[in-house]
Amino acid sequence: MGMVNIGLSGVLANRVALNTTAQNTANVNTPGYSRQIVSLEATSSGNFVNGINLGAGVEVGDIIRIAEQSSINRLREATESAQYSQSYFDGLSNIENLLGADGLSLTQVLMAFLPRLMKPV
Image (cartoon, rainbow, N blue to C red; front, side, top):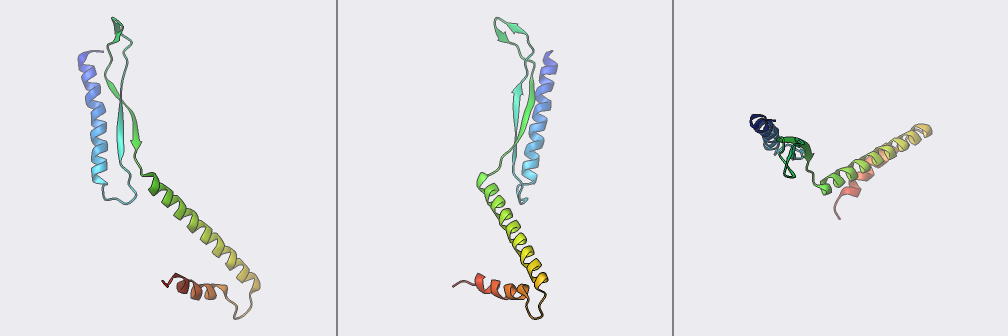
């Protein structure tokens, strides 16, 4: 691979890195966006001189998403809690429909009870 091609591989790989940086900058205030970094790797030409690899330029190895693990854990816990609550509500609604008694509405009782439960003491 000639010098021009080696230089071109560097320019193309760094173009990806600059595009990723632009993406990070544009989304800095976007809720839920996690920044990304580009990992560059040297390419091997297979040409060795005195045991030293001459190289063939650089290429993009990977684009890595950087996220805060605590934020991911909080999101996972909140999602699980919301799913549990929805399942619980669906189950109670089914019981209410099965009972079908006039004046007996679990939904009304829960809707009156929950706001009182949420009030600070």
